Amino acid sequence: TTIATRGRTLAFPDGFIWGAATAAYQIEGAASEDGRGPSIWDTFSRTPGTTVGGHTGETACDHYHRYPADVSLMEELGLEAYRFSVAWPRVQPSGSGAVNAAGLDFYERLVDELLEAGISPYVTLYHWDLPQALEDAGGWTNRDTAYRFADFSRIVYDRLGDRVATWMTVNEPWVSAFLGYGMGVHAPGRTSSAEAFRAAHHLLLAHGLSVRSLRDAGAREIALTLNLVPVLTPGQLNDPSLVLSAQDAEAVDRVDCLVNRQFLDPALRGTYPDQVLNIVERIAGLGHIHDGDLKAINQPIELLGINYYTPCVVRSGPGEPANPAYPGTEDIEFTGAYAPTTATGWPIVPTGLSELLVRLARDYPEVGLLVTENGAAFDDVVSDDRVHDADRTAFLEGHLRAAHAAIEAGADLRGYLVWSLLDNFEWAEGYTKRFGIVHVDFDTQRRLLKDSARWYREVIQRNGLWRERTRRPTLEEVA
Ligand code: GBH
Image (cartoon, rainbow, N blue to C red; front, side, top):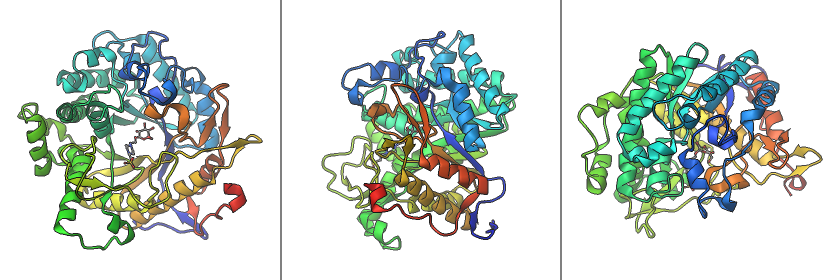
């Protein structure tokens, strides 16, 4: 790919897609309206001690009622694509069988509103809000859930497939499995490593079965979205060419296998890495992986969705206390990084994105790449109806420069979707962490464009960045 660099613009390829993303439970609210059934996130967040401040998605951004105004905002920002998720319990209140017409109607209205505004809808079919009835039957530890998901996918496709071109199956199966069933900090709040591995496999199976049923129905652009994580040692953060000791190299490889290749390899190659199989066998046994599953999971897809926030920094042991999100790494130390962090405490490492994209292009050359989430929480301050979030703009700019570098190095990156359009219900953090480029006042539901949104609008307009870095904020502005 050669990229035109017109004058002072660092241009992205023609046709590069600019957009923003959200997820149903994080923005919709209206949790018990129009026949929506309960999801595991309703149950979990209503359980004392699970979310900061006891916050729930009961009202969230009230997007269920305010979607026309929100689409107008997107139009004002010049978004070309909007990635949202469909709440399974809105469409099938008990996860199987009866369809709730009002649920499908809502997504149809939203899609029509987007199309009228000239914005392409990118539909995610599962962003963590499993119908509670399915959880009561074992949730993602139950193989049957994968088949129910394929049915649900087909129901949504049959209603919207004539208007929606891009379909995404499951969002971040690693998070669902290991934070939901292993570590217990996400719904359904279970804490079993064995269950986490079974859930991971069934989420992959759900992806494969869903691709199959979407494809049979005529879908042309299908994606799997993963949280992908560059794994490296503290030393490599400072010097990427550093040669690692055999023990450190093995530690990096094992964590990479668990968080990245456990999902990439089955979906894109039809295999599990041996490292993963060894750990799964030891912790969960292999009985849940049936003959033919890897073939079912390995369906051709057009796009890989990449959610990138921060790298994972590790070195060889001692891993005390053990990291409950990574079973099988008791002899590995998760060190974190000495880098500036966002409000969630995640180190800011833009080069992680370019490394990731270049590596994916090399190791999985068949699939197109799309950044489906990238963004950051900061402690925004509203004054005089403005939010001067220079830190967020700098974060986004740094990561877009990294994305641009990866394209120049040959990565087939098709677009970039910022997380998130709106401040929203940030899962276990409740409303205390704001990722939006649009500020939301959760008392009044008033929306306010942050400075980062105004900046993003200009980036979209010029299909690129400025060659010279945006002026750094002064100390007074940061204070
Ligand atoms: C995404 O998940 C979700 O798809 C989205 O719904 C969510 O709102 C958004 O990110 C922001 O959280 O503590 O340094 O080890 C992100 C998955 C998994 C990314 C945990 C950061 C921990 C980093 N996250 N990971 S660290």
